[in-house]
Length: 373
Ligand SMILES: *Cc1c(COP(=O)(O)O)cnc(C)c1O
Image 1 (cartoon, rainbow, N blue to C red):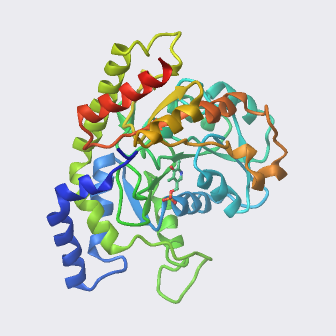
Image 2: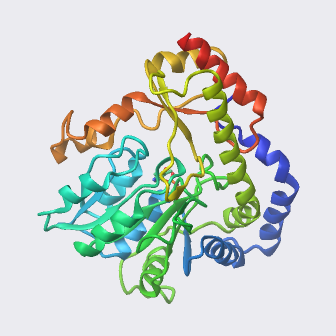
Protein backbone atom coordinates (compact mmCIF):
# COMPACT_ATOMS: atom_id res chain seq x y z
CA UNK A 1 0.00 0.00 0.00
CA UNK A 2 1.55 3.28 -1.09
CA UNK A 3 1.78 6.47 1.00
CA UNK A 4 -0.60 8.03 -1.53
CA UNK A 5 -2.58 6.34 -4.31
CA UNK A 6 -3.93 9.01 -6.65
CA UNK A 7 -5.37 6.47 -9.08
CA UNK A 8 -8.21 5.65 -6.67
CA UNK A 9 -9.35 9.28 -6.54
CA UNK A 10 -9.04 9.54 -10.31
CA UNK A 11 -11.28 6.50 -10.78
CA UNK A 12 -14.10 8.22 -8.86
CA UNK A 13 -14.04 11.50 -10.86
CA UNK A 14 -12.58 10.39 -14.20
CA UNK A 15 -15.64 11.15 -16.36
CA UNK A 16 -16.23 14.53 -14.77
CA UNK A 17 -12.59 15.61 -14.97
CA UNK A 18 -12.20 14.52 -18.59
CA UNK A 19 -15.37 16.44 -19.51
CA UNK A 20 -13.95 19.55 -17.82
CA UNK A 21 -10.68 19.20 -19.74
CA UNK A 22 -12.64 18.71 -22.96
CA UNK A 23 -14.56 21.96 -22.35
CA UNK A 24 -11.30 23.90 -22.06
CA UNK A 25 -9.97 22.26 -25.24
CA UNK A 26 -13.19 23.06 -27.08
CA UNK A 27 -12.99 26.69 -25.95
CA UNK A 28 -9.29 26.91 -26.98
CA UNK A 29 -8.80 29.43 -24.12
CA UNK A 30 -5.74 28.04 -22.41
CA UNK A 31 -4.29 31.14 -20.74
CA UNK A 32 -6.21 32.99 -18.01
CA UNK A 33 -9.53 32.08 -19.61
CA UNK A 34 -12.89 31.68 -17.88
CA UNK A 35 -11.80 28.37 -16.28
CA UNK A 36 -9.17 30.22 -14.23
CA UNK A 37 -11.59 32.93 -13.11
CA UNK A 38 -14.15 30.28 -12.27
CA UNK A 39 -11.73 28.39 -10.04
CA UNK A 40 -10.48 31.57 -8.38
CA UNK A 41 -14.07 32.53 -7.52
CA UNK A 42 -14.96 29.06 -6.21
CA UNK A 43 -11.76 28.77 -4.17
CA UNK A 44 -12.22 32.24 -2.62
CA UNK A 45 -15.80 31.29 -1.74
CA UNK A 46 -14.76 27.98 -0.20
CA UNK A 47 -12.05 29.61 1.89
CA UNK A 48 -14.15 32.65 2.75
CA UNK A 49 -11.58 35.16 1.54
CA UNK A 50 -12.00 38.14 -0.77
CA UNK A 51 -9.39 37.43 -3.44
CA UNK A 52 -7.80 34.29 -4.86
CA UNK A 53 -5.20 34.62 -7.60
CA UNK A 54 -4.11 31.44 -9.35
CA UNK A 55 -0.46 30.97 -10.24
CA UNK A 56 1.93 28.34 -11.55
CA UNK A 57 2.93 26.60 -8.28
CA UNK A 58 3.04 26.88 -4.51
CA UNK A 59 6.65 27.98 -4.75
CA UNK A 60 5.64 30.80 -7.08
CA UNK A 61 2.74 31.70 -4.77
CA UNK A 62 5.26 32.31 -1.96
CA UNK A 63 7.55 34.27 -4.28
CA UNK A 64 4.69 36.41 -5.65
CA UNK A 65 3.29 37.06 -2.16
CA UNK A 66 6.68 38.22 -0.86
CA UNK A 67 7.27 40.35 -3.97
CA UNK A 68 3.78 41.88 -3.76
CA UNK A 69 4.42 42.76 -0.11
CA UNK A 70 7.56 44.60 -1.18
CA UNK A 71 10.04 42.25 0.51
CA UNK A 72 13.48 42.39 -1.11
CA UNK A 73 17.25 42.78 -0.67
CA UNK A 74 18.28 43.85 2.82
CA UNK A 75 15.16 42.40 4.41
CA UNK A 76 14.85 39.36 6.64
CA UNK A 77 11.92 36.95 6.70
CA UNK A 78 11.31 34.51 9.55
CA UNK A 79 9.93 31.04 8.97
CA UNK A 80 9.97 27.46 10.21
CA UNK A 81 13.04 25.26 9.85
CA UNK A 82 10.76 22.22 9.45
CA UNK A 83 9.14 22.79 6.09
CA UNK A 84 9.50 22.09 2.41
CA UNK A 85 12.52 23.76 0.83
CA UNK A 86 10.47 26.31 -1.15
CA UNK A 87 9.31 28.07 2.03
CA UNK A 88 12.88 29.28 2.54
CA UNK A 89 14.07 29.45 -1.09
CA UNK A 90 11.21 31.82 -1.98
CA UNK A 91 12.67 34.24 0.58
CA UNK A 92 16.08 34.15 -1.10
CA UNK A 93 14.39 34.41 -4.50
CA UNK A 94 13.19 37.95 -3.68
CA UNK A 95 16.72 38.73 -2.45
CA UNK A 96 15.90 38.58 1.27
CA UNK A 97 17.49 36.51 4.04
CA UNK A 98 15.74 33.62 5.78
CA UNK A 99 15.70 33.58 9.58
CA UNK A 100 14.36 30.61 11.52
CA UNK A 101 12.69 29.98 14.89
CA UNK A 102 12.19 26.62 16.57
CA UNK A 103 9.00 24.59 16.46
CA UNK A 104 6.49 23.25 18.95
CA UNK A 105 7.24 19.55 19.63
CA UNK A 106 3.53 18.58 19.58
CA UNK A 107 2.21 20.34 16.47
CA UNK A 108 5.53 20.70 14.56
CA UNK A 109 4.49 24.28 13.76
CA UNK A 110 6.54 27.32 14.72
CA UNK A 111 6.60 27.95 18.45
CA UNK A 112 5.29 31.44 19.33
CA UNK A 113 7.75 31.79 22.24
CA UNK A 114 10.71 31.03 19.99
CA UNK A 115 9.34 33.37 17.33
CA UNK A 116 8.80 36.19 19.82
CA UNK A 117 12.39 35.98 21.06
CA UNK A 118 13.90 35.89 17.58
CA UNK A 119 11.75 38.76 16.34
CA UNK A 120 12.87 41.13 19.10
CA UNK A 121 15.85 43.33 18.13
CA UNK A 122 15.73 42.31 14.47
CA UNK A 123 15.40 45.65 12.72
CA UNK A 124 15.62 44.15 9.24
CA UNK A 125 12.85 41.63 9.79
CA UNK A 126 9.91 42.49 7.54
CA UNK A 127 7.72 39.39 7.37
CA UNK A 128 6.97 36.07 9.02
CA UNK A 129 5.77 32.95 7.24
CA UNK A 130 4.07 30.44 9.55
CA UNK A 131 3.71 27.07 7.83
CA UNK A 132 0.53 25.05 8.47
CA UNK A 133 2.54 21.83 8.50
CA UNK A 134 0.96 18.47 7.63
CA UNK A 135 -2.46 20.17 7.33
CA UNK A 136 -2.75 21.75 10.78
CA UNK A 137 -2.93 25.53 11.18
CA UNK A 138 -0.12 27.20 13.12
CA UNK A 139 -0.97 29.34 16.16
CA UNK A 140 -2.34 32.30 14.22
CA UNK A 141 -3.50 34.14 17.35
CA UNK A 142 0.09 34.43 18.47
CA UNK A 143 1.54 35.18 15.04
CA UNK A 144 -1.07 37.86 14.29
CA UNK A 145 -0.24 39.50 17.61
CA UNK A 146 3.51 39.37 16.96
CA UNK A 147 3.07 40.64 13.38
CA UNK A 148 0.99 43.58 14.62
CA UNK A 149 3.40 44.36 17.47
CA UNK A 150 6.47 44.45 15.22
CA UNK A 151 4.74 45.70 12.03
CA UNK A 152 5.54 42.57 10.04
CA UNK A 153 3.79 41.23 6.98
CA UNK A 154 2.11 37.93 7.90
CA UNK A 155 2.16 35.33 5.10
CA UNK A 156 0.63 31.88 5.59
CA UNK A 157 2.34 28.97 3.89
CA UNK A 158 -0.91 27.04 3.51
CA UNK A 159 0.43 24.67 0.83
CA UNK A 160 -0.55 21.65 2.94
CA UNK A 161 -3.71 23.04 4.51
CA UNK A 162 -6.53 23.73 2.05
CA UNK A 163 -9.69 23.47 4.16
CA UNK A 164 -7.95 23.49 7.56
CA UNK A 165 -9.19 26.01 10.12
CA UNK A 166 -8.03 28.06 13.09
CA UNK A 167 -10.88 29.06 15.44
CA UNK A 168 -13.29 28.08 12.67
CA UNK A 169 -11.67 30.32 10.03
CA UNK A 170 -10.03 28.73 7.02
CA UNK A 171 -6.32 28.79 6.28
CA UNK A 172 -5.99 31.47 3.65
CA UNK A 173 -7.91 34.06 5.69
CA UNK A 174 -5.55 34.29 8.66
CA UNK A 175 -2.70 36.49 7.41
CA UNK A 176 -2.10 39.42 5.06
CA UNK A 177 -1.47 36.93 2.28
CA UNK A 178 -1.61 33.13 2.03
CA UNK A 179 -0.02 30.69 -0.37
CA UNK A 180 -1.41 27.41 -1.63
CA UNK A 181 0.08 24.59 -3.69
CA UNK A 182 -1.93 22.19 -5.82
CA UNK A 183 1.02 19.91 -6.52
CA UNK A 184 -0.29 16.34 -7.10
CA UNK A 185 0.54 15.13 -3.57
CA UNK A 186 -1.37 17.95 -1.80
CA UNK A 187 -4.86 17.42 -0.41
CA UNK A 188 -6.32 19.61 -3.18
CA UNK A 189 -4.30 18.72 -6.24
CA UNK A 190 -4.01 19.34 -9.96
CA UNK A 191 -2.69 17.16 -12.79
CA UNK A 192 0.65 18.96 -12.66
CA UNK A 193 1.97 22.12 -11.05
CA UNK A 194 -0.44 24.79 -9.83
CA UNK A 195 -0.79 27.23 -6.94
CA UNK A 196 -2.66 30.28 -5.65
CA UNK A 197 -2.35 33.34 -3.42
CA UNK A 198 -5.26 34.55 -1.30
CA UNK A 199 -5.77 37.88 0.47
CA UNK A 200 -8.41 40.29 1.76
CA UNK A 201 -6.34 43.28 0.62
CA UNK A 202 -7.40 44.74 -2.71
CA UNK A 203 -4.02 46.38 -3.36
CA UNK A 204 -2.02 43.24 -2.62
CA UNK A 205 -4.40 41.20 -4.80
CA UNK A 206 -3.96 43.64 -7.68
CA UNK A 207 -0.19 43.51 -7.24
CA UNK A 208 -0.06 39.67 -7.33
CA UNK A 209 -2.34 39.72 -10.38
CA UNK A 210 0.04 42.05 -12.23
CA UNK A 211 3.25 40.34 -11.12
CA UNK A 212 2.07 36.95 -12.42
CA UNK A 213 1.81 38.42 -15.95
CA UNK A 214 5.12 40.23 -16.43
CA UNK A 215 4.09 43.27 -14.37
CA UNK A 216 1.73 44.54 -17.06
CA UNK A 217 -1.89 45.63 -16.74
CA UNK A 218 -2.05 46.43 -20.42
CA UNK A 219 -0.24 44.00 -22.69
CA UNK A 220 3.27 45.14 -23.76
CA UNK A 221 3.29 48.05 -21.25
CA UNK A 222 5.22 47.22 -18.09
CA UNK A 223 4.89 49.39 -15.00
CA UNK A 224 7.18 47.11 -13.07
CA UNK A 225 9.11 43.90 -13.56
CA UNK A 226 6.96 40.81 -13.20
CA UNK A 227 7.19 37.22 -14.33
CA UNK A 228 5.19 34.51 -16.04
CA UNK A 229 3.43 32.54 -13.35
CA UNK A 230 -0.11 31.86 -14.48
CA UNK A 231 -2.41 29.05 -13.50
CA UNK A 232 -3.18 26.95 -16.60
CA UNK A 233 -6.84 26.87 -17.64
CA UNK A 234 -6.77 23.07 -17.85
CA UNK A 235 -5.42 22.78 -14.29
CA UNK A 236 -8.03 25.29 -13.09
CA UNK A 237 -10.85 23.27 -14.67
CA UNK A 238 -9.58 20.10 -12.96
CA UNK A 239 -9.28 21.92 -9.63
CA UNK A 240 -12.86 23.23 -9.87
CA UNK A 241 -14.12 19.66 -10.21
CA UNK A 242 -12.03 18.43 -7.27
CA UNK A 243 -12.99 21.38 -5.06
CA UNK A 244 -16.58 20.09 -4.99
CA UNK A 245 -15.39 16.92 -3.25
CA UNK A 246 -12.74 18.41 -1.00
CA UNK A 247 -14.88 18.73 2.09
CA UNK A 248 -15.82 15.06 1.82
CA UNK A 249 -12.22 13.99 1.17
CA UNK A 250 -10.90 16.03 4.10
CA UNK A 251 -13.58 14.50 6.36
CA UNK A 252 -12.52 11.01 5.22
CA UNK A 253 -8.90 11.83 6.05
CA UNK A 254 -9.98 12.97 9.52
CA UNK A 255 -11.96 9.78 9.93
CA UNK A 256 -8.89 7.72 8.99
CA UNK A 257 -6.79 9.65 11.51
CA UNK A 258 -9.33 8.78 14.18
CA UNK A 259 -9.25 5.13 13.13
CA UNK A 260 -5.45 5.10 13.23
CA UNK A 261 -5.64 6.49 16.78
CA UNK A 262 -8.18 3.90 17.85
CA UNK A 263 -6.12 1.06 16.37
CA UNK A 264 -2.86 2.32 17.93
CA UNK A 265 -4.59 2.54 21.31
CA UNK A 266 -5.93 -0.99 20.81
CA UNK A 267 -2.39 -2.18 20.08
CA UNK A 268 -1.13 -0.56 23.29
CA UNK A 269 0.92 1.97 21.33
CA UNK A 270 -0.70 5.19 22.51
CA UNK A 271 0.58 5.49 26.09
CA UNK A 272 3.29 7.84 27.37
CA UNK A 273 5.80 4.94 27.39
CA UNK A 274 5.01 4.03 23.76
CA UNK A 275 7.87 3.97 21.22
CA UNK A 276 5.67 6.08 18.95
CA UNK A 277 3.90 9.40 19.40
CA UNK A 278 0.59 10.07 17.67
CA UNK A 279 -0.25 13.38 15.99
CA UNK A 280 -1.76 16.03 18.26
CA UNK A 281 -4.17 18.75 17.24
CA UNK A 282 -4.20 22.16 18.95
CA UNK A 283 -7.55 22.97 20.61
CA UNK A 284 -8.10 25.93 18.24
CA UNK A 285 -7.13 24.07 15.07
CA UNK A 286 -8.79 21.60 12.78
CA UNK A 287 -6.38 19.24 11.04
CA UNK A 288 -6.97 18.08 7.45
CA UNK A 289 -4.18 15.46 7.60
CA UNK A 290 -2.44 16.34 4.39
CA UNK A 291 -0.06 13.93 6.12
CA UNK A 292 -0.59 11.62 9.10
CA UNK A 293 2.72 11.90 10.92
CA UNK A 294 3.86 9.88 13.91
CA UNK A 295 7.04 10.25 15.94
CA UNK A 296 8.91 6.95 16.05
CA UNK A 297 11.84 5.49 17.95
CA UNK A 298 14.26 3.70 15.56
CA UNK A 299 12.42 5.54 12.80
CA UNK A 300 14.64 4.50 9.89
CA UNK A 301 14.54 0.81 10.88
CA UNK A 302 10.75 1.02 11.16
CA UNK A 303 10.57 2.61 7.73
CA UNK A 304 12.56 -0.23 6.19
CA UNK A 305 10.44 -2.82 8.02
CA UNK A 306 7.27 -1.26 6.58
CA UNK A 307 8.77 -0.98 3.12
CA UNK A 308 9.72 -4.71 3.20
CA UNK A 309 6.03 -5.39 3.82
CA UNK A 310 4.90 -3.22 0.93
CA UNK A 311 3.78 -0.29 3.10
CA UNK A 312 4.81 3.16 1.94
CA UNK A 313 5.96 5.86 4.35
CA UNK A 314 7.94 9.09 4.04
CA UNK A 315 10.00 11.50 6.11
CA UNK A 316 8.90 15.14 5.96
CA UNK A 317 11.60 16.36 6.30
CA UNK A 318 14.89 14.54 6.94
CA UNK A 319 17.06 17.69 6.98
CA UNK A 320 15.78 20.86 8.65
CA UNK A 321 16.17 23.93 6.45
CA UNK A 322 18.87 25.54 8.63
CA UNK A 323 21.01 22.40 8.10
CA UNK A 324 20.73 22.40 4.30
CA UNK A 325 24.11 22.85 2.68
CA UNK A 326 22.93 25.77 0.55
CA UNK A 327 22.01 27.68 3.73
CA UNK A 328 25.41 27.26 5.42
CA UNK A 329 25.96 30.98 4.78
CA UNK A 330 23.19 31.82 7.24
CA UNK A 331 25.50 30.68 10.03
CA UNK A 332 23.26 28.22 11.83
CA UNK A 333 24.56 24.84 13.01
CA UNK A 334 23.57 21.60 14.69
CA UNK A 335 21.82 22.56 17.93
CA UNK A 336 20.47 25.90 16.63
CA UNK A 337 16.90 24.52 16.66
CA UNK A 338 16.98 21.30 18.70
CA UNK A 339 13.23 20.61 18.55
CA UNK A 340 13.13 20.81 14.76
CA UNK A 341 16.30 18.68 14.59
CA UNK A 342 14.76 16.00 16.82
CA UNK A 343 11.59 16.01 14.70
CA UNK A 344 13.66 15.53 11.53
CA UNK A 345 15.16 12.40 13.13
CA UNK A 346 11.89 10.97 14.42
CA UNK A 347 8.89 11.88 12.22
CA UNK A 348 7.32 9.36 9.86
CA UNK A 349 4.32 9.91 7.58
CA UNK A 350 2.04 6.90 7.18
CA UNK A 351 -0.34 6.14 4.28
CA UNK A 352 -3.08 8.80 4.19
CA UNK A 353 -5.62 9.52 1.48
CA UNK A 354 -9.42 9.61 1.39
CA UNK A 355 -9.91 6.25 -0.34
CA UNK A 356 -7.97 4.13 2.21
CA UNK A 357 -9.95 1.28 3.76
CA UNK A 358 -10.14 0.39 7.44
CA UNK A 359 -8.51 -2.93 6.58
CA UNK A 360 -5.51 -1.10 5.13
CA UNK A 361 -5.20 1.11 8.20
CA UNK A 362 -5.26 -2.07 10.30
CA UNK A 363 -2.48 -3.56 8.16
CA UNK A 364 -0.29 -0.50 8.81
CA UNK A 365 -0.92 -0.52 12.56
CA UNK A 366 -0.40 -4.30 12.82
CA UNK A 367 2.95 -3.98 11.03
CA UNK A 368 4.08 -1.19 13.36
CA UNK A 369 2.96 -3.22 16.40
CA UNK A 370 4.89 -6.23 15.05
CA UNK A 371 8.02 -4.11 14.63
CA UNK A 372 8.03 -2.96 18.26
CA UNK A 373 6.94 -6.28 19.80
C1 LIG B 1 4.49 21.80 -1.57
C2 LIG B 1 4.90 22.92 -0.71
C3 LIG B 1 5.40 24.13 -1.23
C4 LIG B 1 5.71 24.31 -2.69
O1 LIG B 1 4.66 24.07 -3.57
P1 LIG B 1 4.95 23.62 -5.08
O2 LIG B 1 3.59 23.68 -5.70
O3 LIG B 1 5.51 22.24 -5.05
O4 LIG B 1 5.88 24.60 -5.68
C5 LIG B 1 5.69 25.15 -0.36
N1 LIG B 1 5.54 25.01 0.97
C6 LIG B 1 5.08 23.87 1.52
C7 LIG B 1 4.93 23.78 3.00
C8 LIG B 1 4.78 22.78 0.71
O5 LIG B 1 4.35 21.66 1.26
